[in-house]
Length: 352
Image (cartoon, rainbow, N blue to C red):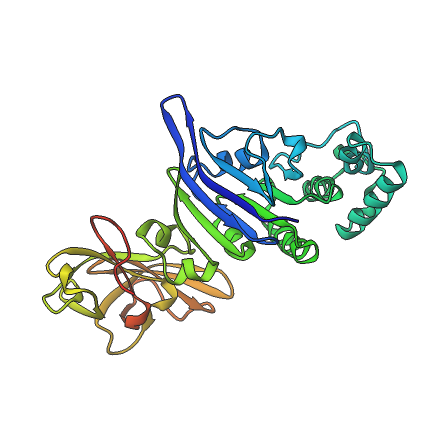
């Protein structure tokens, strides 16, 4: 295991800049998730750490070693791909042992390693099968086992669950978290799925257009997003937003309704964006916001209720099936401490 430092890494393909001066420090044993929309640069950054791409500028250090320009096989890094990348003509045992065989590890040690990781991943009963006889989840476990057998200093996971069905994704997500708790190996995990990011990461780096928008713990991202993009990207259903203004006293006003939130009076008279999470909107008899139910989305344990307001469409998250019908009218309120305020021009967070 080792700490990882990415310092001022940029990547340019011709005239196209994909990464802009990315700097990250991972503590030994940390699980960092890179999350963002397609094309944001997260896989390119992963490939640079793996040695599959060279940075245009910057440095990558693993432990005490500068690995920026080392070939992949000299980095002590194991990567698990979205496509599994198993050898179809080899058995599960042979697939797991192959990286060790390439390193001239003695046969007895290879056998011991295969036994250890296959037991850990609960695939020890599949060792004689070939990949075509395995399910998607089993193949992914084999790919992880092949990486584990090497006992690397760093794990890299590039969207490893995106080919699995919904239930299997949830199961494998839990297995990956347990695996990290057992091994303690420093890990970078790339995904576009913010639920995976929130449940797996010790910290999350949110990327957009090759820039880190925010680096924080999952709850810090959710409760105190640094800008509107992070607020909208993290959280499902997404945060509710509406145009608002700031009066002379610094109070944020939503279409004439005071939100009870005050910010620096330097923003008085300027347009801002009001944000509130779906679970932070509450139905009360004396609420200041009039709303009409336009859509019901029961999911079992909770329901999403879409309502029309004078500020646009809002979503409520409520426990259970809910007691509302289409067309029902209600009044909404919220706690000022749950409100997020963003500058409309810069989209940066304004309230503390």
